[in-house]
Length: 362
Image 1 (cartoon, rainbow, N blue to C red):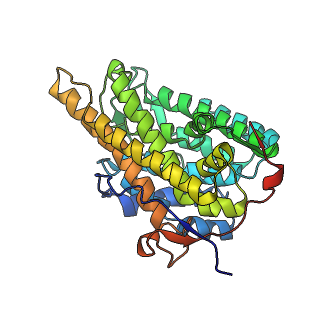
Image 2: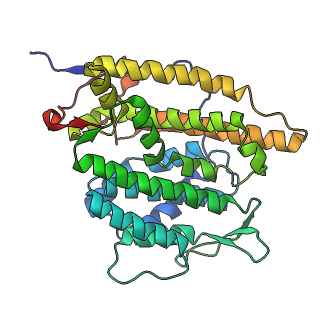
Image 3: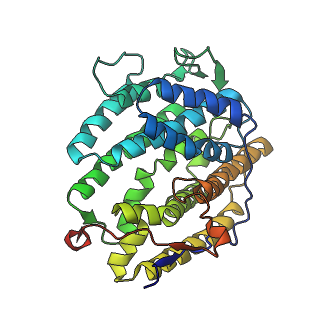
């Protein structure tokens, strides 16, 4: 009997934004990785897997526009924090997820207060991450190092970035708890729309987009413009579902159900391949919408502001590109020697969904 295979969709066949890399990639990522290692969260085995996943490559492409090393360091720390926390939270019960996310949010909000002894190092990781931000008495946002690194000071022009980030991260942590509840009850979201409403938060992509604002001065009324919001949402959906498509094989083998392909299978009664094709078509339609949105950015009277808007929009496009390029080349989703680009997008199906008969829709 021939082995089961899966044909992945070529979702970036018409994607026009090429990858680029940050010039600080090697040095700054090494410093950020040393910070993660110093926290002692990862076992030796997990640390080895973490390094092989090349999250530094993702950060370099996603934040390729960041000129200043201090800006890029915050982005690298964010990528490290998210993937460590994502791996840690994937196996938590709803009760455990609520406890750890509540403590983590408290650490973000009270970063100047040392944590209690015996608390999980994940919480301290959150406190130290946000301690790289501070507001001066005059309202300017200052960037500086945690105690374990040499002092880094850099003034950031928009003082509201911190509040934007914390609000987005609060939604992310709450979504992590909701996902854990679904996992505990073996629930699959009943429609792609209801799944997307949750998935837009569980990926923490909005938090990552918030950091794109660090080098730019864009008025709040422009950021709230419907055209910018549409671009944000399209970029968010492309990153999230692009990840779902390219990580599906690994997640399917683990029995994970927080994936658009699984949701579409149950919603429409489709096979794995048909559901994958469905999500692939959805993604390619959104690519067209995104390219249209990039041509429909708000026109401002100030050339300076227009340039910053274009750079922010390009940053979102870079994130979509980075997610795709990194997902294809990372050992996290594809074993060494298994490059979908070289196999006409056909890959061996890694496993069967565990417990599918007991799953229920919500």
